[in-house]
Image (cartoon, rainbow, N blue to C red; front, top):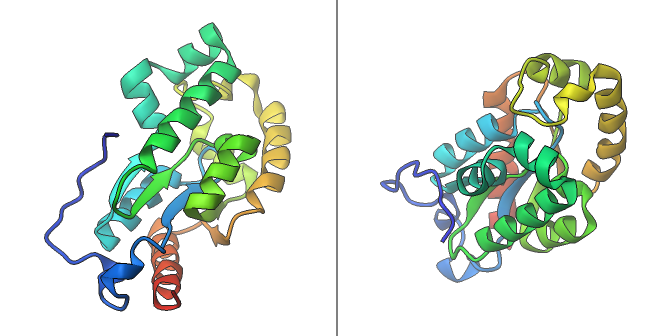
Length: 195
């Protein structure tokens, strides 16, 4: 079983308030997609804690199991990394509870992986302007693509945003992470009520 961040289990799961237990399997888990620095991990942890859900970060699981992502990219290549990423995400979906999953910035841009995510999750695009994302990541050496420079990253951002627009929901993450987390939970609860 994939490692999850345990954020406690003393409260009822949020979907149990308004939705019969039999509907749990009909609901899809929360999947966060977006560019590097859009806040996927930080917001994902907040959403999981507030909703009393498990939290997974596919990049963190890959790091724990296979080593530094920058090294994986440089030594084995992006294709190898994307294969690992797909396998880890597929394994996460074997979980029998609802969860929050933060995926790497490129995961939703890979056809096979985006299909898996769309079929099994409710996708939230964490939308943040490039300038803010870049400010958050420019000194982060743990991100393999940051070394390519600002102009290269800006072009990558433009390409990836076209894929992110296929998400079920768009959430502005340029300001408060608390507000963004609240919006995600609100939309998720609304989906639970409408099943």
